[in-house]
Each structure stands twice: as structure tokens, then as C-alpha cells.
Image (cartoon, rainbow, N blue to C red; front, side):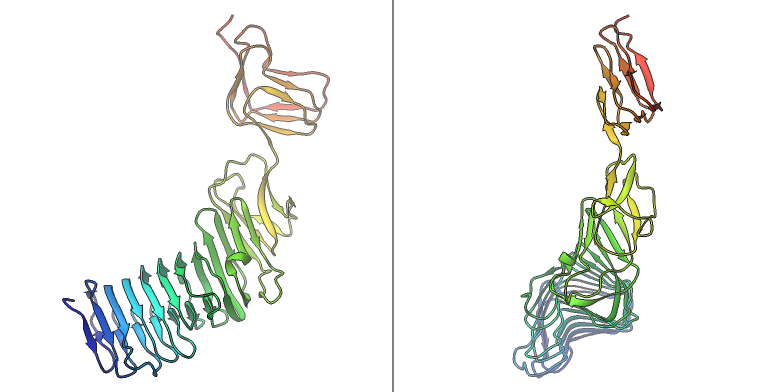
Length: 385
């Protein structure tokens, strides 16, 4: 674009060919001062890019419905990027509409939607798959920020968008069709929400800590989805007891990222050992990525049963499972002294070096019963012979 443009009647830009790039260069498109229209409409095309443009619905007539900033209909493999959209009217005024379209990306856009009635959505995805919605800012004065419908809308990905609408104005998220599956929420804060009917399967991902992938549909509505599903450092919690909050007590796969190395790990539910009929490991629990299945919800974490040893000292906890985490040594005398019964010391292949100052023992056990010492190299220091 080389200047701002507008159209008093209907759509302003209509894209009918594939492999097109429209760069607005920061200019304005003003559409439909006479009533209903679309700023940019694309139908049955592939691999188009719309970027760097400001799209405004004219304020000359705000009494009409179905005004869209950008409309994709049967569009594939395309991108809307760095676009600002402002809409107005009565009902069904939508910032970005993706309908019957697949494999599209909406990134770094700013959307202001308004209307005197209802269903004025920031981003609306209908009958569409694998739409990536990321780093957008949505500010609605009367409508939902994110709206997804039709059961054939699957595998859509919502990443780190900023929803700055007042929480009292409709919903941050409405999934309006039951049995809509595999919507991904990655680093995405969601306040008020609604899952229609029997609900939908969703995946919630905090890229710092982990993922919760529901294997059955969750449903209902509430005021804070991000507070219902909380993923932290070696901790995941889903609140399945909030009155009116919906049904979240469903089977899910849990994954933790970037965990420390565990030596004798177990899955815990509410800080006690999780029963085998509730928790099932899907990977090794030693880290750094750990996955397990749960049949229902509370608080889950990974617990280290081993007592970690990183320096010479006394092992006194009866029944303790001690594990060396590095090579250790003692310049004067004994390195490891065992004083408790039923102890296991697993050296994990590390070295114990003792007696660099003279006489000593690598490991000394006295008056104890049923101990095991394994997988360790014990070397007398050669510094003093």
C-alpha cells in the first residue's frame, strides 16, 4: 500500500489469488461507512500474507452487524501479522475470522472489537484446523476474546496472547461446540471461560514447567481457567471441586520439563505415594523430562526417596537409601561412616578417595545389620604413603 484507502459500500480488499503478500506499510484501510462489510476478505486461496496494516470499521454507521476486520474462508497456509483491527456495529462484529480454513497463523496483531449487542469476538475460529494464534493483543468492549466452534475445529494452538478486556465483559475463551478436541494452550492466561455441553479435550502447556493433556472432555464455565489448572516446578494441580466451575476430574497425561536427576523417584498425590491404580509412569521418572498418567485430579509431584550424598560424612538413617551424586574424598581419616541398620549406599560408579592425610577408611561400618554397599570405587589417596 502507498496510502490509506477506504470503501463506502461493503468490502475494501478482496483477495482471490494464491501466493500473494499484502504489506500495508502502516497505512489505514477504512471499510463500510454505509453499513456492513469486511476490511480484507480472502476466499479459496493458499499461502497469502497480510501484514503491517490498520483496518478500521467506519464509525459513520454503527447500527449494522457482521462486520469483520479480516475474513479467511477456505484459506490455507497463510499468515496475518502485525495488523491492527477495530470493529463496531451491533452483533457479530469480529476482528479476525477464520472459517473452514487450515494451517494458518495469526501473530502479533492488535484487535479492538465492539458492538452494542452480543457475539462481537476478537478472534473467531470455525470449522478450522491447526490455526496458530500467538502474541496477539485483544481488547473487547462487548464480546469474547477467543471463540472456537464446530466439532471439526481441531488441533488449534493458542500461545501467549494478551487479553486486556475487562473480565466482566463476556469471556476470554468460549469453546462453543461440544466434543471439539485437542485445542492447545501454551503459556496462555485465561480468566473467564466456557466449554459447551459435554465439553472438549484440551492441552495446557507451561513451557517452563510442563504439560497437562486431558484424555477426556472437560466442560462447564468459570471465572479463572488459569487458576483451575496450575502447572509449576515439579507440581501440577487441577481444581476439580469448584462449584459451578465444570467437570475437570478427568484422566490426563502429565509431563514435567527440566527436572533434576532423580535416583529413587516416585509419583506422589497430595504428598503421599500415588496408588498404582491412579498414577502410571509413561516414561522413566529419573528426568529431565518425566511423563505419567493420572485417572483423576488433585496435586501431583515427583518425590526423591534417595538420600543424596555429595560429601564425606555419617550415614545414620535406618533403612535409608543413600546415593552418591559425585566423587567425594576426605583428607584426614575416614570418608563414609555407617551407623544405621538396613542402609543401602549406591555409589553410582563414583569414586571415594580417603586418607590423603595418612591413615583412614573409605567406608567404615560398625555394629550394624543388613547394609549394602555397591557400585563405588574406593581409592586410598597416593598423596601420603
